[in-house]
Length: 162
Image (cartoon, rainbow, N blue to C red; front, side, top):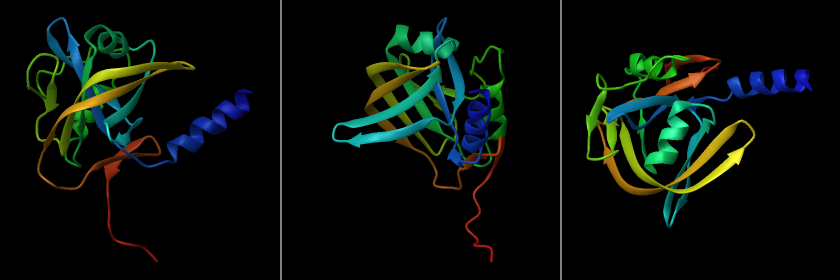
């Protein structure tokens, strides 16, 4: 089974994904976590899905607050992504966040930010899946996204190589 887990981990590293910061509040301060497991699941009603490690501080904070936001990062926001990805480090995000009211934060200059209340919580393996009801969306400047591929952050290139 370990071989399957290792191959599965490697296969998922080969799936290019957008990079988001999931934010909530801990101790009255904005807290952000870098997440690539995020997707829209319904337009009617508007629902979004995020998956977080069950043991992550963010997971318990979202359970307590019943609110979170998802900010989609631009290619020039690698520093933000790295800050939210530091394993075991506190992820207070005042440096990168703008407050939009109680438990609603956006990453400054994000491509988009989606504000949600928790609609449903599902435990799946070592992760907790949150389905969020979208209450508000803030659109930023339209520019290239930050991507995650092969355990690295990078840019989107529209050129097709032969």
